[in-house]
Length: 482
Image 1: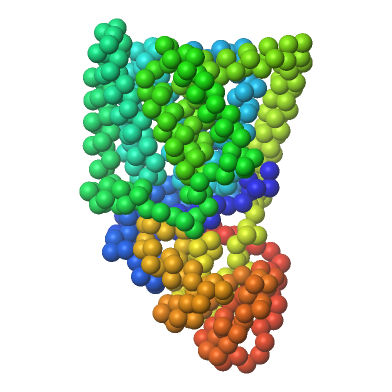
Image 2 (image 1 turned 135 degrees about the vertical axis):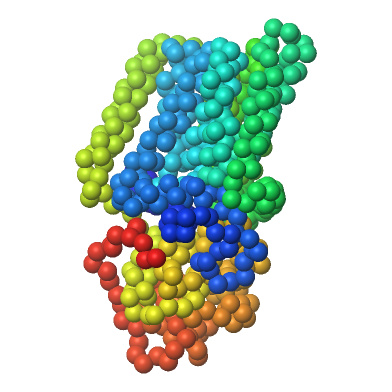
């Protein structure tokens, strides 16, 4: 469970944005946190997530962690309900649902990030579409325009929701042409139009869509989660399994699977393999839209194992019970110890930045992508940062490459990049790679701070060698400095 206690690197910038909105009373259109070249307009498509995260963070680490727990549970609940509404057999799904939960657990593996809202709203949308199809209930789908107003300001994944809804409407139109008994497409079409109108309820108006379009097409070669899924990775086995079930379902049960399921499966496979962050998408599609395939796979496994069937069910139930008990115990223990609960901040420059904030008046800090959001939150307004995890929201690709080259001791352009950025301080990891190349900081740069994880260099004369610094306790990270 340790990996679940690490705050997501982007969380700090989100909280800082939420704090800024609280102070100003509105979402500013220009970024105040950095000093490097920036986009003309700051379009933060997750600003409302930041407001929510700031409110939670002000209550402490435990509130953030509990929120992550709860939204994960509600997301999985909507997915399971969609499975059942669509005809899933309750006698077989439990152990496969456990596989599904494990396969998608990476979505909630850090505390906590804005994409959890997209998967929550998307699971609700799928559930509402299937309820409309199966039971002709409109009330769930009728909430989507109001949800879209929140979704469009919480995460850019709203585009995926609109795409799913448009495909759903198109599927109903095609079925209506072939079979007049199929559900009417007029109501979902009206909902789609209202959802599209709802996307303009944001601080940026039309600029929002131009930004989202550029963000979707933008390449992010330096961000791991935007890279393709490795076919040899253990986690990709879950994607392979559910896609195989989906493909076989489409071939064997093509007469009873809805039209949109085929398109969803193709989109899910495309995005799931192209970007690691979307690996859960094809699994969600197969589990909700192809329950007949899930049940078929369960029966197949049971038939193959034959005499082991009873043992399989018993083992699966025992495993589910143990898994559930562990999760519940952890949940309630966290609830009981909420006031003293702490997240793990060891991946971040906690001690180094507390020292810098306490011992220097301010300035411009050259900092890397992974540490930038944390530095932004802890140092503003005394210090400005060179780069952080907001990436496409604030920085052009030129700035990202410039900062990365400035912090890379093996890059031949490093000295030139540092000169162009012209920072007052440089925060860098205390690594063996840097150890052999410290000559790049000689001359104008003096090492003023050192601990086991980070070094800080400054533009000043070195009066004495920097001493090792050790922080005995972690300060309350979420106390605002502005």
